[in-house]
Image (tube, rainbow, N blue to C red; front, top):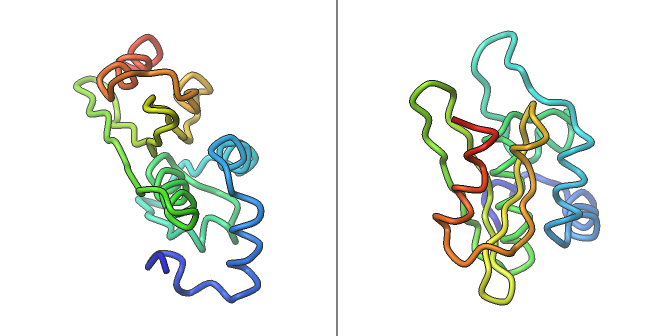
Length: 133
């Protein structure tokens, strides 16, 4: 079992598995939760807290997405897009038919989901360039 989800009840885990079983469904869930602006200081909510609080910043959303992918037998992969003049952005990445896609949470819609159409992780990362520099 995914360590980050170990403290969920059996009922919560079953609901998590049913509801978040594809990358688009995971993204839809993250789009529905409030963006965590960390007004009271830095946070790092576990997937359980994200599910319960219905709020997440980019790394909290990426960890939840990676955990959801892992529950369904996929590798839990995360990519950190490091910035020079901005904040870093973290996304969960996944592969379909040999192509890369991403799941993400952001204050900006252009920094969220990417369909799995990118041949390399570099291509995927570059798709965020226009919205993020």
